[in-house]
Image (cartoon, rainbow, N blue to C red; front, side):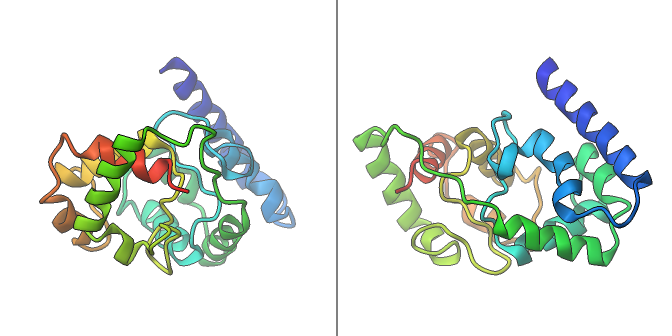
Length: 193
């Protein structure tokens, strides 16, 4: 926990400095702040923090806008995004979409858990909105090979209604998924090949 707090404080300090730096700074230079938490090249190594690599630009744009407007609350992200112009939001979302997508873990996954997760994904039509390969599309996020802990946390938050999307789709979908099934679904998607 202390490591995560230190990482967040470092990111906030960098964001504060970035706000006072010359506007001619490139998006790559400004994104260093993002990498403090979301990992180098958008591949997160921080617990409960998503990998950004390969995320859909429209989805990233919506999320950054929601953080800026405090429609989605997570204080470090709200603080970082609060000074973003509409142009900044577009540049960052385009940049995120060009980062390399997360790779599947070396471990191919337990076959029984993978089968249970596949059955859940099909039953709840995850492969419909998020694509058959979970690559996402437009304003629907990429899920394939996302951090398992982050998927578990996010799906649980949709289930208990503590996380709200920009529409009610995920709350509806998670209504039929039990708390015991969430880890199986997160495991499957994080290990997807």
